[in-house]
Structure formats: C-alpha cells, structure tokens
Picture (cartoon, rainbow, N blue to C red):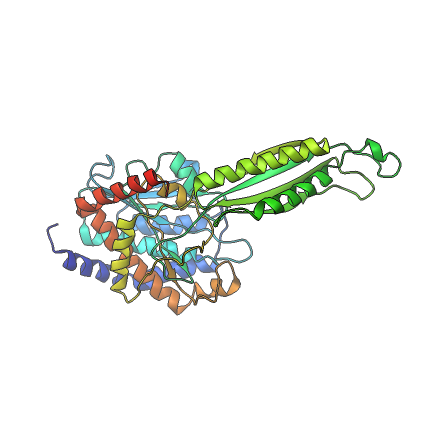
Length: 401
C-alpha cells in the first residue's frame, strides 16, 4: 500500500462526500419510480450509466437477466488476476409498497462505494466489480448470477441493508416456495357423493398435519401456507386443490429436511384420502446467510468512524431470507443491517418506505458507502484480509454454520 491506511480511508471519505448530493439524487430517483422484480429497467439503466460515466467497463444483461449488469475496473479487470472485490447493488421494489425494504439505499451506497474506490485507488492491482442484482424480493437474481458463474474468482461480496437494528451481520434463514397440488375426482355432493374424491379436503388435511408438525420445529424454521386453488363451486366435489407453502430453515440443511417432511406429509395425506399429489419447487431456493467475521468486522470498524456502532444480533431473532445467502456460502460476504428507523418499526411497511427517503436514510447511506468502500480497499490492498476471509469461510462451512 503506497499510502498509509488512514490517509487512504480519508481520501475515500472525501470522494464519497464529493458525490453525496448526486448519490442522494440517485437514491431518491429510484424511490420515486419503484420497479418490481425483473422490471427494474430504469434503475439498471441509471446505475450502469453512472458507473460508465466514471470509467467503469459495463456489461449489461449478464446471466441472461435483462436488468442485471456488471461494471469492472482495475488493472486485472478482464483477466480476474489478483484480488477481486464485488460491491452488490439491489434495486427492486415491493409490489404496492415501493421501496419499503430500502433497496434504493442499497443501490446508491454500492454505487458510491464503487465510485469512491476507483477515484481513490486508481487502476489498482486486481479487480473491483459493481454488480447489479435484480429481483431480491422475489425471483432471486443472485441465485441466477451464482449459477451463471458471475461470482467465480471473487474474494469478497460486500453490501449493506437498511433496517431497524444496527447489527454487524444478518441472521437470515434459508427459504423455499413449494407448491402442493392434490388431484381427486369431481362429483355431485348430493346426487353421487360416493363417487367424489375431495381434493380440497386433502389439502385441508395437509394444513392440519402441518399444524402439528409446526409445534416441534426448531428455532428459525417454519411453514406458512395459503390456498391458491380451492375448487370452482360449492355443488361440485373439488377435483383439484392447490396450496403454496413458504418454508424457512435456520440453515440450508434444516430447510432441506423441512421440505422433505412436507413432501412426506403430503404423500401420507394423499394415501389416506385416495388422492394423487404433486409437490414442486417454485423458483430457486435461498440458502442461509453465512457471515464472514473478518469482513464484517472491518466494515463495523469503518462504520464506527461515522458514529454508527454495530452490535451482534439478538439471539434467536431472524430477519427473513435473501438471495445473498447463495453468495455467502460460496465466497466471503457481508450483509450488515444499519437502522434508518427505531426498532419499534418494521420493513415492508409504508412507514419504512417513507423513512427510506428521509434524512436519517441519507446519513446511513453515505456512512455505509464509506464503510463499504474502505472494506473493498482492504480486500484489494491487504493480502492478509483475503487469506483470513477465505479461512473463515472454510471453517464455518466445515462446522455447518
């Protein structure tokens, strides 16, 4: 490192500060025009354009996703030689609620971090990526990107998430969506009741069975289901009924076991009711998040310079699931939460969407951009960081964490 770490971090903070108004304008533009999963054409165009104007080489439509992109810079950007840090940007919104998860802030913080690192370090030895990751809320853009090999050769995946807690890492479960469809036989419930095989009755029995199962599930695991097809008329025994079930597990292996339990329950109900059942996954599964202590510790130290102190999550509290999990089980990754409103609030609500465009949100976004940029610089310039980060990942994988 040709300059001292502190002088480098100070330069990064200056670069973020110089872009503060523009970064906030980008955040507000995304907030005003929310776009849902795989429809984020305006957001992807805006973010990729900002990166391109400051010298990044941008590839659009990566991994077969029209609203995904990768922006590259660095002396080894084409060959992926040397260390590689990736700054991740989410920008999809929630149906009807807009940016009630604050993805406008994730995008602008990732953008600010990427621009600041490039300006402060120039063409570093290694590669800096700014990755546009669509459809986190539903669809799992990162799942597709991982499977396409987009993160191959990356040493660190860095992002933050706005929330209602200041936590150094994210307790995120593995999750899956599973559709269960029962096939019976239609009949008139009065005229020929013995000829009918009630598919809806089988589905209701499955809900009852899962209610018993739920009472013995471990912390972090649950099943929540809805009826998506319950028949067509009250004077016809339903020949088909369908439910959609959301399953979560504290770990990816716990989720896999829970999916198999659901399958066994459905098959048992089908046998008992003389129906035929189909159990199918809907979309890709989200794996649990595996925090990298080395990188999240660096981020927390950098964020504290801005006056925000992160703590460990409250034991036993989980904050949902995210496709960042599929990244974190394959390479070192961070996903800290930084509060933009009090713990009495909740994301995925109208008040959180309002907070994502408020003064506290601006302060958090800029502080997160600085901390992300400084952490990326650590990855690119300190060989001990990447070595320790990969060792941490291997250790947690061996321990099943």
